Figure 1 (spheres, rainbow, N blue to C red):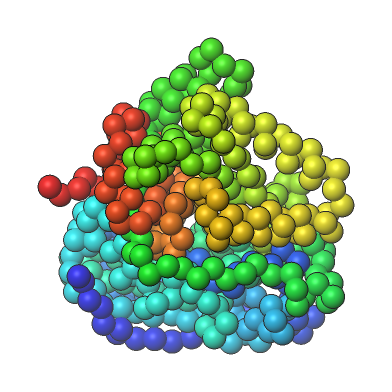
Figure 2 (cartoon, rainbow, N blue to C red):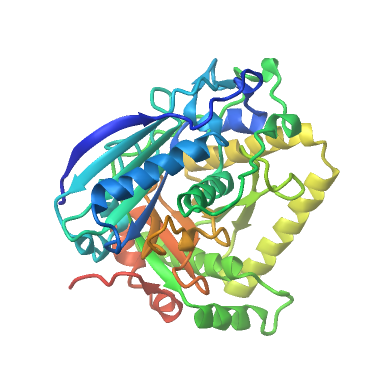
Length: 432
């Protein structure tokens, strides 16, 4: 296992101080109900060229551009206060670590399990509480080969996955000296106001994760294989224009069901939760949490078949959109909270096999360029909850990658599924 050494650690201050009128950032009801944790993104780059004093020069570019972008994303440089009801935008700054990793980058990227990427994050920070840490913690990791990794752990209380991708894209653009001015609007509380009567009782319960070890692997669905899946789903069915995420999630769900049946000898009902972005109708530049979830159930093996599952998923999406369209915006967070509590309750009672699905594709993360080219890999730290599927754009942007987190025993079974391997390839093959 690779080890790391912290070379330096500092706080990055804002290039321009936050105006007094913006000092108190009110969190929205949607922000408040999220479990306060750090969402961990990592970007790996081969040895940057054309830099004389590479380590210090690269770090200086990142530090300067981070300082500038924080002036626009100022809540990430403050402190979350008063039971997650507001951010004191006091310009404390973001934590920034410069770290040396004592191995070549290939040792990390060529490992079959994604878990090894944890070395490019501050110890014990990914998916952990934001209560006693900065809302934003950045780490620049240098490998023996000259390759680098840039990781960012961002408070899910302040921004969701979509907002995180906007922040990273804007940061990279500033680092490249692109002539533009970021325009994030931290106004989610105007759409989802937090009433003080709700502040103490309307939060998600913190899940107690079992001691059983979870592992993660990345699988790639090429554009051609996604096309094949779409053909299977639409042939002799009433499914129209399925998205690539719909067909890919249907397949990994089916593989999960087969894995469960081989383990127990019987079919168990399933519940798949899909996180969806509420932008639009919420404006695209609104930063904060603006998501809801779709719940798709299967009660029989027949409902697991790809055309049937995608048809039900599309029906559930349409029904949710109809409900949200007719719902007062103030009620959307409460509705989302009840859906999430329902999922948590099912997980606790173990009445269904629960699969958690989310996607941050079509966000440009696969081409984040700070000035030395696109990343060779974009990923996240291993999720603390099992049966988790996270979809990301692949480096070419044509296909899609899925980061799959399962228990170690389940992964050994899952990764041998023949139907999975007909349509998806592990980004790194297992060593025999």
